[in-house]
Amino acid sequence: MGMDMNKDELIALYRQMLLIRIFEDKSAEMYAKAKIGGFLHLYNGQEAIAVGALSALRPDDDLVTHYRDHGYALARGLNANAVMAELFGREGGTTGGRGGSMHLADVDKHFWGGYAIVGGHLPLAVGLAYANVHHKTDRIVMCVMGDGSTNIGTFHAALNWAQLWKLPVIFLVENNMYAMGTAINVHSAVIEIYKKASAHDMYAERVDGKDVLAVHEVVCRLAERARGGEGPALLEAVTYRYRGHSMADSDVQRSKSEIAEQKMRDPIPTFAENVLLKRNLLTQADMDRIQKEIEAEVEAAVQFADASPEPALNTLYENIYAHPVANMQSGGSLIGPATLYSGNGKHG
Ligand SMILES: Cc1ncc(C[n+]2csc(CCOP(=O)(O)OP(=O)(O)O)c2C)c(N)n1
Ligand SMILES: [Mg+2]
Image (cartoon, rainbow, N blue to C red; front, side):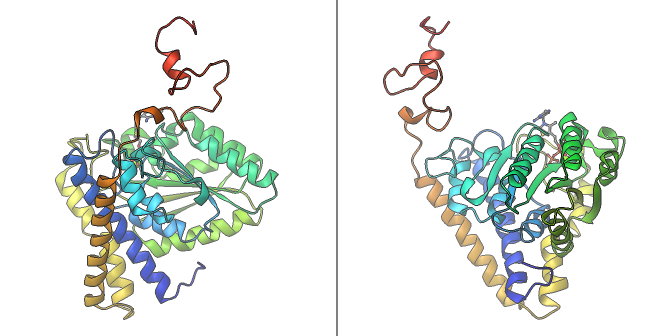
């Protein structure tokens, strides 16, 4: 999509944001019912960033994110059934139930995954961008992270190399004002995150992360720059997450009034009112219908996930280790690691 979007493209943005919102609310419900285990970091409130950013990229541009990744998976066009099944840890999931919430991925869609180690994926994004240049493709890389990750050493290492080599990467920082429960002014000396790019002489901008069209517009420009060989950029999108850090977080550090105030300018109804209704692109009845369609889509994803089998025990190590595992012999149906950890003395 270019900068000026037509009616169908604008409605698509709305549908995507609503899909993410409803999908996340349903995921919270499924977590409470113990259908989903492990960690679950939800994206409520931040939808305009994933949707605005990815609609400005090509589908074959590479994408790497942190663990708050469901919105990116859905906006990249991964099937909601497969994403929900992955959260359920089932065979029908995006990676056969191996990764779960924090590790959604689809290599065919150039989505290289969510990563759990804060800042750990930034050097991978630089490597992907280097590979794109080396192989003479014009694909660019989008690397998504939170404000907290900008305090990590790999942030500076990655920015330095990307700038030095003029690599086609957009570093997108979702500044939701908190790293877990720690407010930005408590965890970072520089609270306007985009300024951190200046340490590496990198071009940077700050955008209202609740405005899907503003995010789309700036990412279009940064993508064009990067694709044209002008090098990397850092984009700070200022936002707020409505839920605690993860479903396991009691969220006691943030005041109820602050959260309520942030919800007053919700990115989804704001876009609906200021753009879709105002320009007569949709009526309230159209919006009600879309809401119902998406609720049905998410409900179907839950049914699909629930009907999908648990991965079979004898596939436990499939797609986990490279085959054949170096210096290891296969014994029975479980390859390598089963013997490695069995303490049978074979592998010292
Ligand atoms: C290297 C490392 N340190 C600590 C953690 C634990 N941890 C997980 S998420 C997180 C906060 C990150 O906050 P931010 O980058 O702002 O992202 P957000 O969750 O707000 O989207 C921390 C400290 C981790 N996963 N990795
Ligand atoms: Mg944060």
